[in-house]
Image (tube, rainbow, N blue to C red):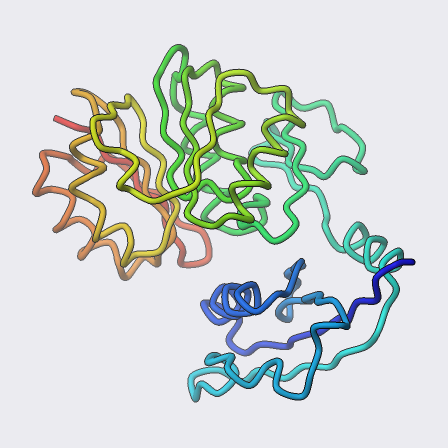
Length: 278
């Protein structure tokens, strides 16, 4: 018998960073899938998990900084799948990279990444993932050893392999992301990516030519020394997951470890920074 799902449609003002926070909080209480749209996010949870207190401890819903309203309705699992497919639109980056789900047609660009994101972050729709792909497009990754820290769906690790990087480590602390990244690595026929569940403590003794870290600002600041210690001479560090206003505090921390900011990309006030190790 098909599971019955509830569809919650959240309208959020202003949309960021509330949407990202809301998705994280809902994921922690059992919501299984999310589709962002121009007004906020649509979230799905199994009906059997629903009760009058389901959203009682969702902090962002009680924040004075945002106006968040929602409606909900019951849908069958088959309809839920159809809704997810209808709302997850493929994207293209610089007319070179396509990011799509298995049910989308291949647009036959130079690079084609097929992912099924489920609850994991990193569909390419978010500004940070999009900008990281733009940075990677400009880099020569042939035979470079790469780390994708906070890999989410594994999209950036997968793209790095498509650009001939090897070997590649992809790490995420979230079990769902770990399992989803493994699934997407297999889906894209990648052979040089190792996926691990854990945090920066896994990096002790490791060395990389390129480190990709698309994580929130506080985690980046906490783990910056570890990233720097793991970076080979002349290595590259790509950072994202924060706003343009955060660049000064990030830069102050990074330059402690002989890294120099070369360039950054901005998209809707989100930024992605490229540092070179001196």
